[in-house]
Image (cartoon, rainbow, N blue to C red; front, side, top):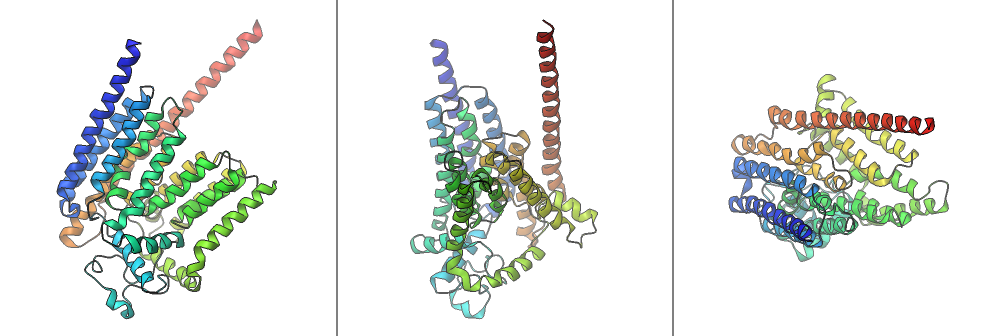
Length: 452
């Protein structure tokens, strides 16, 4: 009993100690406040938080979860977010684009039909208009996200308050994951992967990126898929209507529901279709322009901090569509293959989102939050390390602040991606070797027993 009490005390002490160090990093960021003008100091704090996070995860993985430690970990994760939330987002200007599209809708315009620089919208310009990205193109965010923008403008129109729905979705993801793992012996370790991840906290609580809406849809789909596979397609489709990347997950979810053999599978397809139509309906009359807008976007915004896409683009001369087609074939080919195999949705999501991130034309830091909830199910040292190293990508703000040139440093890309792929391949190779050794040992035991 005394030994068990000491173990519990040590676990709580680890949560408190590591949590205090992480909170010091976030308080440091809060003190800098206008992070874009203090990029080097911010990167140092981000890397320090990443190091503490990885060490803490190792410690959590060596202990059995106690209820007190898990509650304390969840509470501290919310405190970290509360520290970052009051900051005006300066690392990215995306939130100002969200506010613009909300304001446009509030004034009766369809955001898919009119670009911000259209003279008819001149009366809506304010001081945030100047920093808003993509003034020459109409909206590209999917319909469910536009509905969130519209609702948020009514209640939280301010430049910081507009983060409310995204910060709330982030906390909901944390709580759902905690509920899903509540009975596991290593729940502290698995929940901490998301709850304490510095990249997640900075990108959602700090910058207010809307990607968390898609993550909420995926996590809700995972929570439902075992007992309610038909209804599980609804949140995944809503996630797709918030940010398009979850679309590749739908085949695995639909197959889990029994399509095409069972009637339930067809119900899942129908529910997914109805969900998409309900999200699209308010913007139907301008969706024809979305294809042109997306074509322009894909041709203009590409090769920003990408990995395999950049290598394929370089190898093919830089003027072909081969990198894009390779990524599409890799992700959708894998999606269909996993669905055909009836792979479990959680593992399918992990493999598919990893593939998208590897082959995607852009590798903005907040994109790498996509895989973090899935690392709770499939902890991978390479991907965990990647989320910490992504703070190096913010070196782009140094040149942008001085010269106005948004260009990622190839050296920093090498420092991020070479260790990542080295650990990823090494972990896979050692895993395969371990499996072969286990198989051989099992065969020897079987032969020995048969000889008796």
